[in-house]
Amino acid sequence: MAIDTCVENFSVAVLKTLAAFTPKCRPHDDLWPPIPVGIQDDIRLKNRLQREWQVTRDPALKAEVNHVQRSVTRRLSEWRNDKWSAKLESLNSEDHSLWRMTKVPSPSSPLVTLGDLALSDSEKTEAFADNLETQFQPVTDPSVPAVTEMVDVALRYYFMTRAGEYKLTNPEEVQEAIRGLTVGKALGPNGIPKRALKHLLQLAVSLLVQIFIAILLTHHLPTVWKHARVISILKPWKDPALPSSYRPISLLDTIGKLFENILLARILYEISDRGLMRGKQFGFRPSHSTSLQLAPLVERISRNVGEKRLKGTVFLDRDKAFDTTGSLASSTS
Image (cartoon, rainbow, N blue to C red; front, side, top):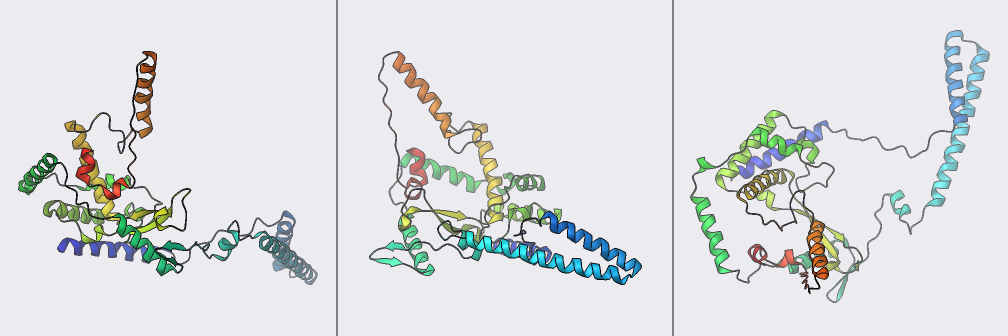
């Protein structure tokens, strides 16, 4: 569709601009500590004698400049060799300092698959893919019929609503969402950093507004926003040889996440304005923490203990609940 083309062209334009205005070589951090004070003093002396010789052209002064220059060169070479030797002697493969120094990633352990070992990067990728495919299966269990019917009615009413009644976005709302982006995060599939969006010109912001309005009017989410770059992070205290011990992290399209932030702000406003959120819902809410749920629990237990009454508590821990439970079933559990 045209929206997909517009999103792709906008992303390409941002990437081209970044490539054009980003220095090809960034300055590296100085690997050497500050030069010793004694050598710095000799360098200052050499520079001062050099300036005096340029004025007087005294041969004796020139000889002294050359002598100090050779001394500085020799002392600098000795100091750098000593530092480099000490650095090499301190390298250790156990604390990964050797791998960091050679800029080679530390070798990862092989993955245990069904009757085989995944050793190469391609084999490990296939092992992770197979494990994710096993986890993320479509939920076929039917949900509560009453809840399903309620959602169907709401969706039918939504799609029958005229486009003119929608609350479309505007540059002010988009700018506010851009200011709320957190920089320094890993890049998504499009390779656009969030910091780049914070430096968009007003014309580019206006183009984003038009794209977002088209998405709201057509109910079409761009296809590229449905793709993610998945990285696997080892869970604490888990066996690194098992693919199931890694937590998949999905890195989404930067512009798509910006649009999601705008929708999220609207959803939270509607939920709060209509009083749809239960007062006991603490997770995924601003200014609420799941640890705060312990306060009323502890208070009730303490009160029952004081009144010599029994109190029963049931804790439900569903393994991979998000991966295996449908959204409707989760909302009714």
